[in-house]
Length: 356
Image (cartoon, rainbow, N blue to C red; front, side, top):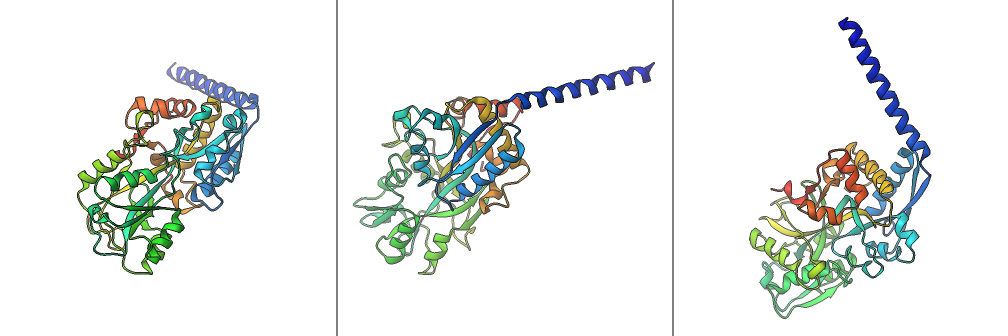
């Protein structure tokens, strides 16, 4: 009797499994074929490369969704290129970043909401002058910071410096322009990227390596971690990041001796998140499918062979953000992404939790 009952139970479970599989297969088969694009910045940008990987994963793994990558003039231009039509907003995954995501498309009611984290754009203060040790030492100096883009991240560095130094002359430029200014002495101190891979891998960027050929590198403003984290947080809520454009704090802490023996003490740096996103114009089921592909590829570490940053695109990393509360995530994540994470009991995380 028990054996018969066991057999009946197993048959029932098998039937349910088959029906469920059949229903899912039918649902996929009945889905209308959908094509999307991914605006991914300049060819050669690291997010451009891993977005090509994402398009391949979507094309290989989805029964009804296909993707292709589109080159633009940069992350800011990713958004600008979509504002021509509602159709583009509804059919394009956008590689975007904080700051800027909440303003670049605001006049067209386009706000790219987060799907999954891609990488972090991290920069440190660096100089060839050993006498520049603190932010106060920036007074009277020429300081080179990122491009002057509306609501771009140059304001974070400018606001940070202005809390400590006076009579500062600011220069602006891309990475190569800043490197040239520092190398040739046109600027006394400035910011250059570091290579940071979640959760705890640091390396000198090509810019820092090239600058080190000119002389020893010094990383100002070491120590005073709490004070500097507070200063970065303040910079993120100072004009133009006020009112509805208030940023979350984007400060992080680098441990000592992770860059060929530098820095000597804990070093606060600014890290701006780069992430895959979509406007609410894109249907929830499309975003849900994209989120599924990203998360499963991250679980299997499939991004790693495509670019060095790919090894940091893990299942832990893609669900992190600088939004601490469920309320903030509800506001800033795409509903389709939230559906996938909730349906699969995947916990979204505050980016700083692993540090704590």
